[in-house]
Image 1 (tube, helix red, strand yellow):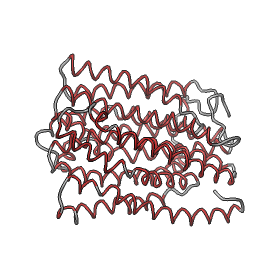
Image 2 (cartoon, helix red, strand yellow):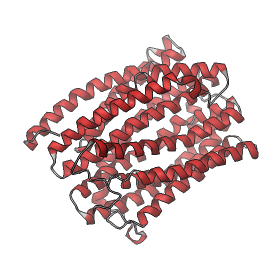
Image 3 (cartoon, helix red, strand yellow):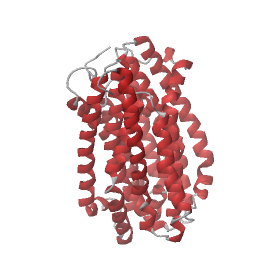
Image 4 (tube, helix red, strand yellow):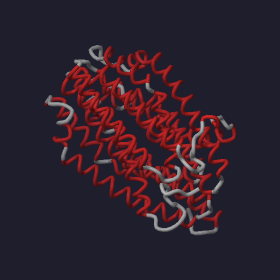
Length: 453
């Protein structure tokens, strides 16, 4: 089932293959985020501060509604990778077609929910009155394209399962360029506001997802997609759900805590909302580097664990941690040093810019701790332990943030004191996950009677 586009994860050197997998994946995620960053930059410079805040206010809402289903795509990645590791072409094909159909169902569910509940959710979050109409308009148009967003996430997960991260990157390069051009055309030429950048984002998502569907329909191995084979295989769906639902619930609860933080942020005014919207882009970029190595760990370990190559699993763990640490530190440091240049892309308002700098300093300085959380979660999911990191992260990150917002923060209300909860919650969770991982690592070591996984 190996093709020229497939990375051989079961044999040979590790570090170079991890980079070949992770770097295009990180670049793909960054390009995907650039869809939103382009929206933020264009409206911030050409449509004003209210439009910038309106687009920025939607980030946590979008994540809240989509993360459960994006978590299912992680399940797709693990399940397809394990069947590839077992060289089971029939089951691989069934998993691919189940995942494609699942992505479409998920997308249409999100389309309906997003459009119906856009404004009530924004009102619940205390979105400022001067931006709520624009924010609602942007959110409804964005969710109209949700079937294609889900289709992209699942098809890219399928390709990643065999080590192909280059074609998802190619699709996003093409659609990303189109997105930026359309943003400028709709806002500058047609004088549209948030609706223009939302429409541009939907069109670009349609293009990227359809490109990946085209690639899969022209595969020559078990990943080939055929319309007549689209069927929801119940046993495979359950396997995907077993891995994906805990990961999705973890992300969903994260989003709930972030919605609560966003509500507190909204209470500080539209300038604080706009500043966070600008700075958040660079947190996303750094996180995508972390996430790329985490997904590399899931996929590489998933294949090797299924093939009973336990010693190689341990080597993958070490190399992933080393490469991810170096990458995270470099990217975080670069953004902090170039903060004025970076924020300049999004706003020329001195008040908004200074608040954005503050967020960058506080959050980016601790991204290395977040990296530990993501990598350990990836290691555990790769060997089938998906519920444990989900539970720990829910309690450690989300629980800490919610308790802080409703108890300590009201007594010391300020922009800086709101942001400090991010590193505090990461530190608590990273320590907890490390102890649990060492315990499970030892358990797997004894079961396998080899050098560990």
